Image (cartoon, rainbow, N blue to C red; front, side, top):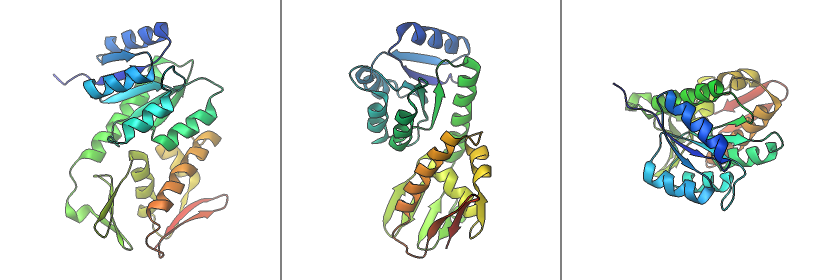
Length: 230
């Protein structure tokens, strides 16, 4: 029998937290609840969850700060935001902090569970050992998609899942345009304006990581997509 998925739920609305936790436990999850960001960080360190579901607006420590603190030492655990309708700018900040996905309140449990399983599946694929032959050279860099690493000289830049997925798509289509819509549909599941803004944030990060080789560029091809040029 497989181990249950260990999930940390950080939500200050105790009634909502109880309903979500009870439903997830009925689906076989092992859930611990925190009701503010400070308690959330403490339980994260003790519980070591497989996935975290975190409210944006909370007392003592907000969700964005909590995500930033988790990402200092953990780049792989999937982090999903719960957000109210009017908190879109906060969610953009959260993606910059390192969150992987978001879901708006009110939400269906079916959608939340599907998003959790999708992120965990991608995480497991990313963590599979990669043979040396699987490394991809990009100019002066060596990109290891499976290990979420970008090597340059003696330095290593750790990548988030989303950063690695985007760079892999661009690298697979090296020196050609990767359509923006294809990237959004493949990685986010829809091509909404909000997800497009989110992808722009990740592209900016990747450009920063690749700045040490002047022969590498990620070009924005207006109204079409992106091109990784080496």
